[in-house]
Image (cartoon, rainbow, N blue to C red; front, side, top):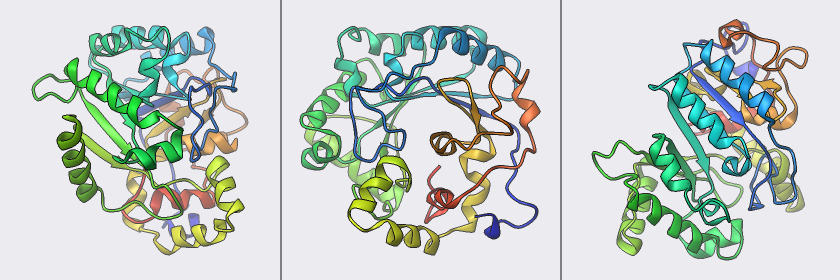
Amino acid sequence: LDENVPGPGLRRSTTKILQINIGLYCNQACGHCHVESSPLRQEMMTAETAAQCLRLLEHSPSVTTLDITGGAPELNAHFRYLVRMARSLRPDLEIIDRCNLTVLQEPGQEDLVEFLKENGVRVIASLPCYSETNVDQQRGSGVFERSIAALLALNEAGYAVPGSGLHLDLVYNPLGAFLPPEQTKLEAQYKSQLADNFGILFDALFTMTNMPIKRFADFLHRRGELQDYMELLVRNFNAGTIESVMCVNTVSVRWDGKVFDCDFNQQLGYGMGKDLTVFDVESLEELQKHEIRTDNHCFGCTAGMGSS
């Protein structure tokens, strides 16, 4: 990717987004998952590391968004502590929960929707299609039905209702070795299908390109499609996406506190510097102008209309 970037290489600007992966445990095991989450994973962020992330947030006034992901982040014992403390420290902060929707029906999560509402958390939920067959094929039997029930519960609490201030967005990712369609057109289709068939409202749809790493790369390799997919990404490289890729203004923190340029580098173990952790920096401003580590997977964020 560096060959396509003018100048000395891609460098970090001011950090605006602190993304924290607080654990790899998940109640699902999706075929495309780049973090290889599943109910068998045990890696979870500790209270000490979560507290240090909050200290970093407090000392980094440039950060406007706390993006909490996993796994199913809500199933980490410290998720609610992290949200409450972040909201207390920064009342104006945008807090995002990357939600798989079915977690809302997990035991002990009966009050999760109300908790998210009370703390003004923006929900970005994954729903790879508005078709039951396609969703269950990628995510498991019964996932679509449970996802629809979760979306209805969020709507009932006020999410995506005009004037509520509670934002609910959806994420689409392709079911195979192809690029996502144009976002605006697909969003219109999603809104029409979900409203007409289920009475569901949401604010925006984000299309995400599947990254050729981890579980999705294994899927492509088994089908003999990995090389063709990489060529597709490179062929569709769009230089106009460079300034908006996540690594420019985002710091990604792994469950163990190690710091990365993005969530995808995190999964490949491409850390910043020599195993830099949240305990090694006082403020995220220290990371400004650091050179970003790139590799072939980065073409996933720069193909077509971009995906970051």
